[in-house]
Amino acid sequence: MAQIDFAAEIRALRGTYTSIENVTDVEALKEEIAELSERAGEPNLWDDPAAAQVITSRLSHRQSELERLNTLVSRIDDLEVLVELGQDEDDADSMGEAEAELESIRKSLKDLEVVTLLSGEYDEREAVVTIRSGAGGVDAADFAEMLLRMYLRWAERHGYPTTVMDTSYAEEAGLKSATFEVNAPYAFGTLSVEAGTHRLVRISPFDNQGRRQTSFAAVEVIPLIEQTDSIDIPDNEIRVDVFRSSGPGGQSVNTTDSAVRLTHIPTGTVVSMQNEKSQLQNRAAAMRVLQSRLLLLKKEQEDAEKKAFAGDVKASWGDQMRSYVLNPYQMVKDLRTEHEVGNTSAVLDGAIDDFIEAGIRWRTDNRNAER
Image 1 (tube, rainbow, N blue to C red):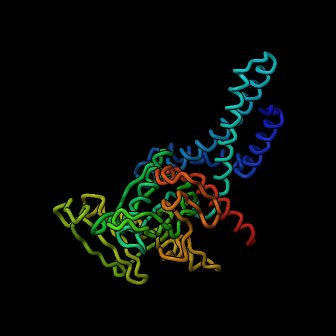
Image 2: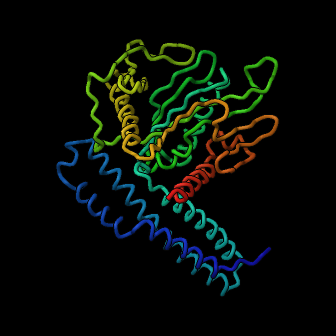
Image 3: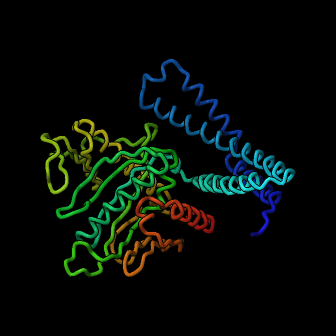
C-alpha cells in the first residue's frame, strides 16, 4: 500500500480551500449576514410573513455557508495536528483516522467547490420541478413516476424539504405529469442541469410478450418566484378552471371542486394544482408557479442570446440527455457529460449527485468557452 504524503495532501487541501474562499468573497458574506441579522431583528419583521420568511431563510443559509467555511479550516488544522501526533508516536490507529479524515475533507471541499460554480442569476433560488411522460405509452407514464421518486429520494437524502404540488395520473399506471417544489437554497442551480429528456430502456412489465420497450419523460426545472420579483399578471389575462381532485385510476380524493387550473391566455402557459384541500390555497400555489414560468419567459425575451432555462423538451427520440438502460445490460449514462454508472437501482433510488456535479461542471465549461 502506497505511503500517503500527508504534508503534500494538506497543502493541496489548503490551496483548494483558498480558491473557494476567494470565489466566495468571505468579507462580503459577513457583511450580508450582518445586514440580514439587523433586518431579522426588527420588531415589525413578521408584519409581512412572506417577506420575513425570505429574510430569515436567507440569513440561515448565509450563516450555514460561513460556518461550513470556518469548520473546514478547523478540520484541516486538526488533521495536521493528528498527523503530527500519529507520526511522532508511530500510532497506526491515528494514521488510519487521519487517512479517513483526509478523504472526508476532500469530499467536503469538492461539494463546496461545486456550489461556487452556481453563479447564474437564479441559481440561489428554490426550485419547481415538473416531470411529464413522453413517447412510450404506459411505460412512459411509469417512467415519469420512477423519476418523481428518484428526485424525491435525492432531496430526502440531503434533507431538503419537498412539496408535491400536483399529480396527474395516467389511465393504466404511472403519471401523465407531476410538479413539486424543492425548498432549499441553490435547488434551482443544482437541479437545472437535470432539465431535458430522459430515456428508459427495459423489458416492459406491461407487455405480456416480454418485449423490450423504449420510453421517454421530460424534466422541466424553473426557479421559484420570490416576493421581490415584479411579475404582474392582469386578471383578464388569466382563465381559471376549477375541478375535483382525483387519485390513481380516477378515484376521488376530494368531494369538492378544490383543484385549480390557471391558463395564461397570451402565452398559453397552463398550471394546475390539487395538493391542497382549499381552492384558495391551490390557486395561490398555481399562481406562484405561473409567475415563476412567466419570469423565465420575461428573462428569455430580455436576453440577447435567448437562452431558455427549461428549454424545448420534446421527450422523444433524438433529443435525450440521459439514458437509463435496464436491459439487456445495466447502465445509466449522461450523453452530455459522458458520466455513466452501472448501478441503476442506486441511481433510481436517488443517488444522482455525481450526475449533477458532472452536469454543473459541464455547463460551467461550456459557458466559459462561449465568453
